Image 1 (cartoon, rainbow, N blue to C red):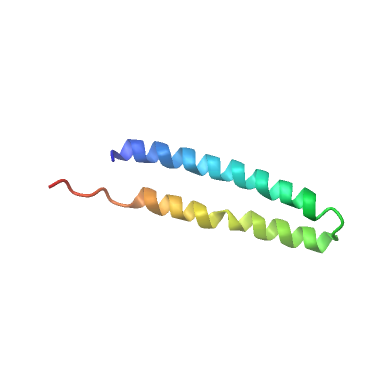
Image 2 (cartoon, one colour; image 1 turned 90 degrees about the vertical axis):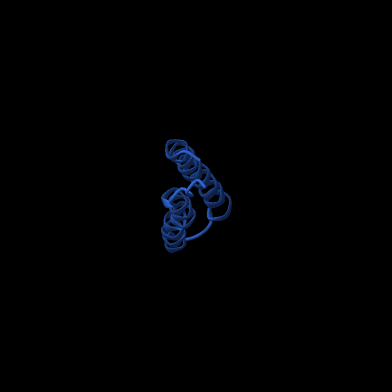
Length: 71
């Protein structure tokens, strides 16, 4: 796969990941945490704010893979 195409796909994947993850985390917070205290909110948003990094790291590692040499 050409490097430019791979970077374009990776960019769209990262943007989609952030948007979808933020929507899901917000919907979950509104639905489940409405009666919770401030410490539960703090911990949820701290963890959910850091958790998106794991799938993003996978996408970035895929982007950093060297293309296979043509035989």
